Image (cartoon, rainbow, N blue to C red; front, side, top):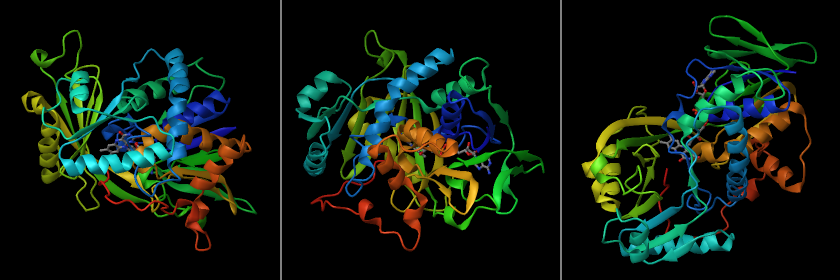
Length: 413
Ligand SMILES: Cc1cc2nc3c(=O)[nH]c(=O)nc-3n(C[C@H](O)[C@H](O)[C@H](O)COP(=O)(O)OP(=O)(O)OC[C@H]3O[C@@H](n4cnc5c(N)ncnc54)[C@H](O)[C@@H]3O)c2cc1C
């Protein structure tokens, strides 16, 4: 079987890895691999601290995918010498004022109702865990199971594993630096037999996977069933480097936990990297500015410094903005078209693409290889992510909010 994957972001690359493990020959096509949302992402693997009201259908997917990370990391560590930037360190969520604490406490009730592992701790206890935290905070919560990975390192390592000879059953993948322009559709009844790139080359394949992030549904020839509404939700994100004098004794970081906060009603997070880097994010904008926003960058630094004042003494390394591929119900869209075999759509991972990538890659690979759902749980993931939920006759009851919150914190990223 030969499969073309349009898009080598985290979803395309991990889908390629999953397919190669199943013995499939893969060609990845992307003019700028891993330079989309994957390049910007903080890489929080945060099924608990990412809980938002009204997203009940998403929680099981987030938890299931987070649970697949140790297996994925073990496989890739065997297959490539490249680092993955996977850190199984905890997350601490803090509220800066009383209403921030109250909003987090309300959300805590939802998290507990879904059996998630999160404890309220005292601010003093939080500061004993992380001395860099500001002294005046109103509340703190500890989440031991929300970890992180460096998406740039993960994508690069996975691409190396996918293209390196001898790492899995299938042949090494090919990477083509082109943009997929249209699907090749042939035969009666018609089916997708490949794709054409911008340089006019025709690429034959048994299946084409559209994993091109926010642009996944722009390819010409897309059947109506897969023309789902994807929209860009821009996120600004800032990267800092910690000077040696601020590093914790015996560590290469200013703090070791991922720190998340509500700051006077606004969300912010600070993610420490192994090399002394700190990632601060992220805004959530639905405007026409595809470059970093001045106001957004200002707010991120202002709010992050209310949580960790010492960040104002660090080096400013990078500010960037990228588009998250948003869907109307915030769930990814993974599916085929019953009328036109040979094409699989895998996009719409919105704010959680890095977290959801192992599960998304597996569900996508199952559709490519025609594998039935392994059990009822997996069948429910298929139903939750199916494109038909956007068709006129669909009943989206499963994704409707069932909880009416007293206070609603804004989207964290
Ligand atoms: C600021 C920010 C912070 C984030 N933080 C997190 C986080 O902490 N945790 C988390 O889980 N998620 C996070 N996300 C979300 C996550 O980054 C995305 O959900 C994820 O990267 C989506 O992956 P993707 O592969 O679908 O898309 P992308 O990473 O955008 O990749 C799409 C690829 O397709 C290519 N492409 C486009 N058109 C074509 C074409 N026609 N032919 C061929 N190739 C094409 C592009 O060049 C690109 O390389 C964040 C996003 C942003 C913007």
